[in-house]
Length: 438
Ligand code: ADP
Ligand code: ASP
Ligand code: MG
Image (cartoon, rainbow, N blue to C red; front, side, top):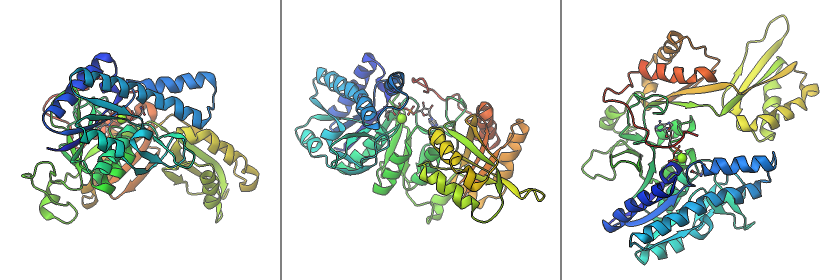
């Protein structure tokens, strides 16, 4: 008998029939003899619709109220799911994040889980019942206020509950068959990845592959929670995310750390996949005096504005003017405050002007094997050249190369790079079962 945490995303519980379908699946897992804890997201695009609603009331809703509003989405799905499971003759009880013991810091809108005290969940399991937990939410014990974990946060709730309970596996049920070599909505020939390490998954998630929220992967790595990403619309085996290329669920499968184990390293692919991100914007500070301390001053101002910067490029200064341009990318939502903060110091820094560009896209090629393979960047740039796509910024790490392009050429860029690295599947097209991609 295993203890299984199952998380169902919004597209898996989009309407009443989907809730009933998912309930059947949960009841089956329970009847098969497992202890089952379920984490559920808001139905369909509920969270986006609630955000739209708030935007119709006020352009800048108070963060505390916004969090209370958004957590309502998961309350709807958790209670309906508990009803549907009970209807099937299996006892089930739903809990808000607060009731489930998900304790967070006090940062509204992107709270971090600081502790999980799942005593009510344990009691429920011990009674032989299924516990349903509302994803994406928690409570701060200093303010006693409800918080949300940031978009996609139900994944993090699921992994945190799995870690807190010492579950055997955390199953993330979604609308595709697992983690693919690229988003199947953009690249129909994307290939399902059977196994991926936490490190590679971290890079994929950080680079925009929203199939798993970044923080859920960080959490899974820290507490060594095996994560199985799979579809709620099929019974196909999905993608195992673990610390090694081995399989902790199947003891007969080979195990090993690709970092230290030569046999496991042979299994490591050179490239794991191509991720894309449309959520960033670019700010350019034009005509900055090229003297020591300017970059430090600019990024002090940017940091004080609370923006998380990603890529940075500084041009070679023109000899006759002694001026240079500094460009950086940041989450689009951080744009307005950052622009305002930089404008306020124009007199002090004496730059010429500021530009804001939200029509950019970022493509990232990820693979733990690329560090030992020269020529990966050259091949990436050649693929983009052959597709007629201009590169605006570049950044690299040991296991990732990212480039910024125009937003409207991003899809073509992803497809070109995916093909150039031989990632296209020969076994037919990837299935996208549901969801709006919103
Ligand atoms: P859920 O509602 O189940 O949380 P999400 O929409 O958050 O689902 O995540 C699933 C979606 O992630 C897929 O429908 C797919 O479009 C997108 N996605 C992006 N990159 C990848 C990838 N590399 N592999 C699989 N899916 C991806
Ligand atoms: N409902 C939340 C969102 O849409 C959390 C989640 O689905 O994981 O971001
Ligand atoms: Mg999600």
